[in-house]
Length: 428
Image (cartoon, rainbow, N blue to C red; front, side, top):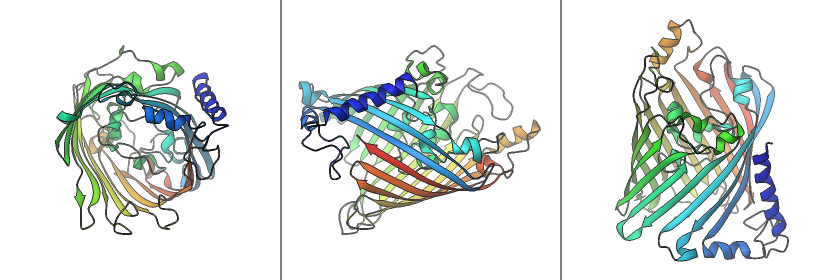
């Protein structure tokens, strides 16, 4: 670990010492946090508007069969430390809040090292905690948000990933194909956490179930570089190239006889980068001065086990479209389910299953073949995952899973891959 990564772990350790005399004792199997309630101070601070967040997530995966080099295992991890401040509770400043989050990633990628053909990088990753930004530590969120409750208006600005507010998807699976905003297939122009970029978002409540959001984000390739430790903490705009403009319409209905909650997102974005280094035709390499894309993202509870509450079947689906002139991937589809509370004694556990299809742009494939590169001989990559998320305690969850990848990287030159994995999350 580098210095900044060590700092995150050291601070987390300090929090554990502070919990020695907590009302909710450290390692309490019924407690909310591994390190307890800090002698009641954690709850007291939260009631005053100061909330701390610290967790560690790991992904361990084993390539049981297929791929480029079978019979290997790898582990990746992410450490997260954050603070949220509600200034309305703390200072009486109506509707104002602040958030800062730092993350550190480390480990190795099974997909990059053992599954993919070196000449055809895998589109997804079997370890969601190894995604973009895996080098060392970085600032992930630094934002102020102002809510004008009477107007139904919210304004947020600072450094953040676009997937926090647009095309949002939770990260409940181990494969990256089912984690975070699916517009990530739009090359470097869409950035999810842990990558942050300068931006602002305005959200307006149109009606009780409807809202609309619009944003503007700096387009800067340095944000997702992080080849050097300090790059993850850089806030300059030295290599900025245009902006990304996302818009989204959000519908949050209560459907069916049991009034089950759902979220339906319809969005699009436009990017104005025009430096040929960053924006070029995917087939001819000719300079381009824009790119665009769109999405539909759905989450809907379908049944309620006891007529009410979270237990029951939940479905989700994501569909994306991308500019065929500039993007390696021109569309993706994803559909899945989660069943919460298979056993009443474990109401927050869920059984999950999902399938993803990520299609290579035919123009990209033609351009590669014209250059003599014949490896992209499959139309799409498919990712499939079956998992069970088990809450051993409220602060410790385990995610055993089975994954199957068809045509990794969009090539038939390597065998389909069968992966056995287990994820974990510890909330400090």
